[in-house]
Image (cartoon, rainbow, N blue to C red; front, side, top):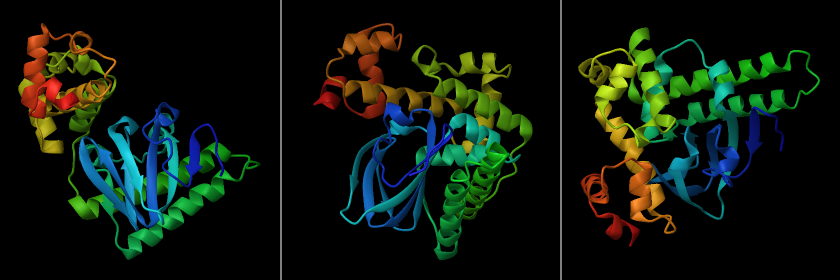
Length: 268
């Protein structure tokens, strides 16, 4: 195994979803066997030849690999991914689609290309005496990302996303990923921070992701709440307070509306 501050290579999914890789994006290529896991509240399966990209490890739970499961994983810090991402707005659409489903089914040619990309990053990572090592690693990770864009666009199609729309959506999602939804769940609040109207923010969100802005606010919120509800050391009142609900009763109604069960029923 080789690793550096910005890139870590592993041959298992141990630690995915834990604080150990909290600031890393995981890129996992399944080489053999399979693995079931819960992601974003839904069951997913990673099979031989599949590529899985996880931006937010906390969305991953209950990893159950088969006995013959083999995988190669490249973890890259968020900051290094930003440095390595090509000048294309396609990444925004890909980011949103992977939030909903992190697994891409690759055909034989794509699998071979992906294996070569992984091997290139690993080989370059081993070149510790290279005089331009950081630039070398940025270039190798960028090649990886460009091929990911190509794989994804062939699955979901290519949309020309205007620079302004991509910037607004990126800033909106960054606020949500930073946990702003715990205190603010109104589209108006986010629109004000982004200096646009609520209608425009929702139109941009719908055009890029297929969902209105309110969907993403509630999605991030309920995923966080459901994670906390599984921690039985936290009372419902405590969780309600963490999200600034006006009362435990309102918190209970929110959970019922978005999870289909009450907090008590969800906790079991």
